Amino acid sequence: MNKKLLITALVLLTLNFAYGQDANNPIDPNPTFGLFNRFYSDNESRLQFLANVTYGKWFLRFTAEYEFNYNNEPGYSSIVLDDGKEINENHFSSTNILVARTFKSKDGNHSFGVGGVVSYLHERRFAGGLNFVSVSKVNGWRYISLVTLQAGKETFLMEFQPGIYRDFNNGWYFRSHPRMLFNFETGNNEIPIGAGIGKIFKNGTPVVNVFLEPQYDLANDVIMLYAGVKTLF
Image (cartoon, rainbow, N blue to C red):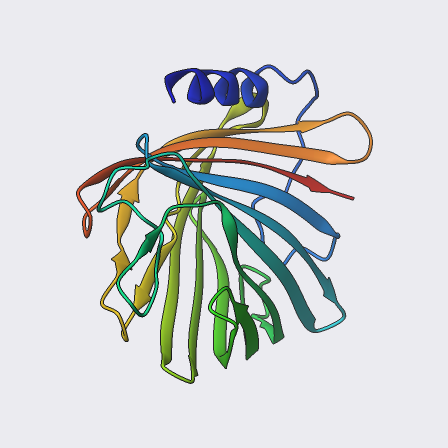
């Protein structure tokens, strides 16, 4: 697992590009594609693909997630059947489509959107609900939030992403942007906190944005690493 983390760090931080702007704004009108991985100690990781774009006053986002499991010991299984049998295997986790109507303040420093979201989960269940997304710039800091609340058959989920960013010279920036997940049906939650660094590179098109953010999951007492790369066209 340590080798995986080292390789990820080297790949993300040794790309040779130049600085680009607005790469941390999820409502940026430019088409964005990203790959994010959440490493949960030596037990598992969850790879997420993301694509989003703002067209006019509408923000659209698509995500798909796949889970990789490394620990075969009892108690770490990701799937538990009705008969209690545990299956620890790699599997598709979820996919969703989010649409939000966006609004912007007169000074352009504050944007937010409200809309709907529909998901398909690996339990062969559908869920749907509401979403809220916002971006604010205050005194050099950028505050970002994303909230979704979804319900379905035996399903009641919430995702909360509070983000804080601060840009520095040469494309470097500070970030604290955990992805908190709440399952009100099963009681299985993820409440990570952490802080990390990122770098924005630009050499024409696309703009490339990479980051590493160590985190600690308060709900499960697990050390995590959140890492990813995004491209803006």
